[in-house]
Image 1 (cartoon, rainbow, N blue to C red):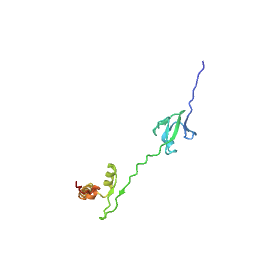
Image 2 (cartoon, one colour):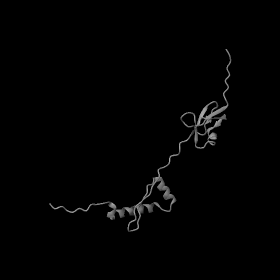
Image 3 (tube, helix red, strand yellow):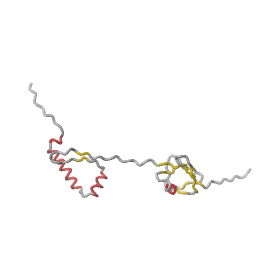
Length: 142
């Protein structure tokens, strides 16, 4: 019987998405490598490793590009046609958080917004044009 001595390599191998293999002296932290490759992640298989993970010598890791950040849905503002009174009605969709931020940062208070909304409701009740189209029918004699 003979003796067996195994010497582990003192390098960490990183395979880039183009197949090129990079070698770094072990031990090395993930965040040190990610500083050189912004917009990428290091993974062992299908899951990404946290930045403070220590990469082990003799292992092969993969440098994979991160998916692009999700673009939030663009909010659109719709304007109604100007009427005789030079009033423009604006329809705006905001999340609750966006509304809170707007009220916190802007020069408008919550009470001002509520009074505007209540005023709009009163105008809508008084104005038949805002209710939509109604047919004007004549009585049919039999």
